[in-house]
Image 1 (tube, rainbow, N blue to C red):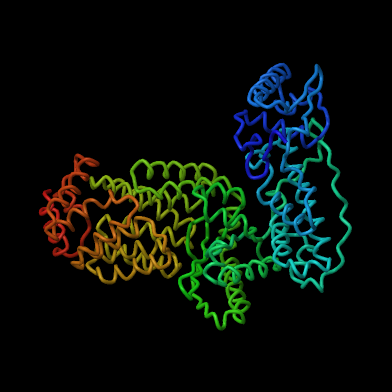
Image 2 (spheres, rainbow, N blue to C red; image 1 turned 180 degrees about the horizontal axis):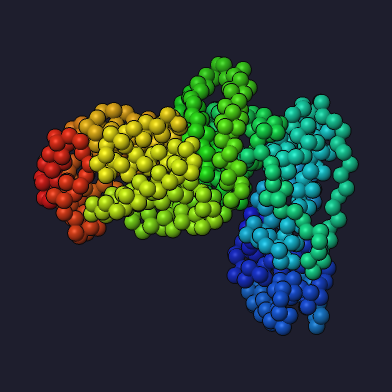
Length: 608
């Protein structure tokens, strides 16, 4: 073959040397359509499929797209497409395509190929609207699912299934992710190969092009298939499969047991392991959560013989449950089912208790994902990022005016802006406190609202009120790491630095890949305990330590490292030329005078 067209997972055209052909995306989609139909297509029909609406401009666009594709592939003696006055055809002798999932080796290889086709998804960036081409994309995806189901049912009932249980389990989980209501697939997953019922006869889907005009029989999207289904959970394995094999760890096998066990239940809808791995690795978590409608993530991490498990309620990024399990190599084979059962019971109990929250996000998905984008923006502790997050939270309120967590998010950005600008702007804190109270009035179950109320009260100097609000937040959600973080800050400002350091260490333990705010808080607690080197060490672990430059300058000053202290001071003044350290010392809420004097001494030694 002179060219290869990839359509699963991404969309690109390469030549036989592996070089990428720089052709427009619409040209590649056109190639995929011509290849999939396998027959000449009328030019006018193809133009209207790709550019519905104005027929004249559609014909012009088609001519331009064909010309650019021909020019991009002109170095090959084999033309990709042939065209006459009325039709266009793809030359299948010159083009290989990953759409040929039917033509693969043994039954188990066919099953694996079908799994990959469904999981990686055909043309993943397309298929989101009601245009004819998007209908066709969804039609192809649905056919891949139908083919996977046909192969699964046939293979699961065959004698070969006993030797390929992992492949059978993976295929079943993928099918149940697509349609949690498929009881026939569920029966095969929960039974051993010897116990499975005979596979039902599933007619193969005819491979043909859909009509070029929209019809009433539009293929149902995956999100519609999932409508009204139980809450979705993604189980994130502690290691890659290769890493687990190298370490001789059974932790991944435990998560696989749990995945199979949960898929056999109707209480939750489980995201396929392939998807969970991509969510763990992705930098754009919000878009993947949006695409797969994930409400809960079970995050797992292995440390030696211990497995740390935490359940995260994704709409609020809240850790609602966490536990450690000892993975004793001598006992774990017998304990796997027991541990998986314990986790499953905890998951379902917690999901039931939080059903009203999950329902809220199902009912207002646009608000939910705007809120997630706001959370993602807060991963950077800079003023532009904080203000960008506030815009996303306000967008969430535009979609759902009673969305309490969006009010909580705006409150958080106002308090953060007060810290970052260091101007002592009381209006920011008054707004933050008002919004937190409004969120509590609308929904008194929001631990995050009590947390933000405590934060705004702290910076307004109402330290005792702050501690009371944060104590309520911790009682409501004892594993919520952000609550422990804020509680730590208030304890430190109340002159209880040792208690504060213990709280923030507990927060870091719950959230080991800690955001910079956790390390900054630990550094502050260490400073007031006189552990200046420890404070510097925490600051050095921050991805962006500039927000903590004031504290770092004071630490270096107390350690007698004048040159390092002055470098930090210069960065502070560069980022905030109007910084007045005497005003800041008066504004910062510290209950004990000795704390203020130590901070003053450090800043003075740094040259402020």
